[in-house]
Image (cartoon, one colour):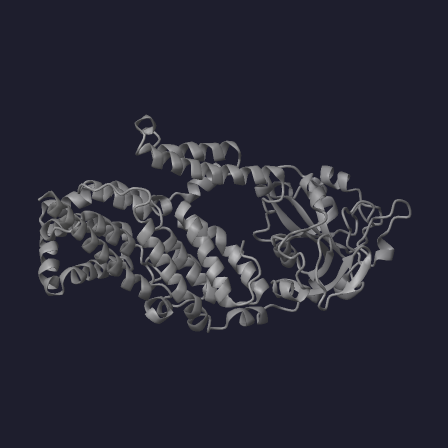
Length: 563
């Protein structure tokens, strides 16, 4: 979906739209957690500074969360808080104003994010920090997927050489013909030969559009891919695997692992095994032309003394008797679990997750209009969906528990008593009267501006959920005093409370992207580097003031018509 844009503004636009749309249907916190490694690999491959993309991604997730009711826990708190004041926030109530703000902020972010962000080191500094890795590189071949994102794309435009851990792109093999890597246009089923460290191989395997030709052998390890990782191991001098043709089935049965790549000792570039030394006399291993990388399996590949193997195995199997008898030094590669993509069951799980979410939302929306479907509430629908995802192993119980924010749940539980207390002690009336009196000379625009500043300002310092709970009775009193439609104030408070763009501690997504982008507090505090704050603040209350005026005019026309 993200593709291979050639400029930072185009990359910002694609990322903004994708993250915003996803945030409208999925809670933005786990969605950002999922996108962080994708963003890091994508920016490395494109050669863009991740600082120019990480903060816009966080802001897009916050603004996208306002497009629908289920986009953020904040919206559910607003629904509960304002229901006590006589207004029920529906699923698409915020969609129109939030969509206008979302697009306006996108227009602002396209030129401003590349201009104002990413001026502290960036990708070049990150790459410069990498130690020389030629002596740790494996020779691997990846197949270009037909009709994939790299089919019919020039190799030098794919950005493979910028992926961290990739030492160099050696050549391209097409139908047993070796092509120079310079300016070649890739085609489906081409083999691209890389020199990469273990981390580089893991990153390449996570890149959509190319696949490891050994994947069929790896899949024979079975299910429970979440429990597997990639390990770098060295053959012991006493290993029974030395100087014998490798049998992948035996290795899979005895050692519970599959070989991804082999690095020899002091042979060729970076210790590559020489193809002539690795062939069995009978039934030779099929290698990619001009390389020592197998085209589909390591069967009949001859291992030598001192070889270093890159293998995928279950973490629980490391240290078994078979491992300790054949493998010496073992180094686990962090975050190297195989990607859950490319298999039929993966596609079915994706269809179930997306279709289930759409069905859950659809039944909830229709349930408001059809009495027979009134029991299909959003909560009930989502609980059934989570149960189905657990049954199909799309999610695990551990992942479900980790996605729960206990702090948010406690705040939601305590929201009712807190709002009642504000109402009973008269604080809501006092603040409402104060705001109305102070901003009366400025009219509706002044009142809306004051509410926006209070909500957006406090949300950057305390929980935006607490801000909504506090402002709900206040806004209800303001609506009564000024005869404003309560709906407009509900939308203003809910959307403004999500405008957490000037402080890293104001929202979880800001905290999550801060280490990746190396942002300082000044980056968030300064409006000049907040690509969403200016248009969001200006348009938010202006749109809603126009909505109030339109509602008043419609009401007056109805009254006049009645007379």
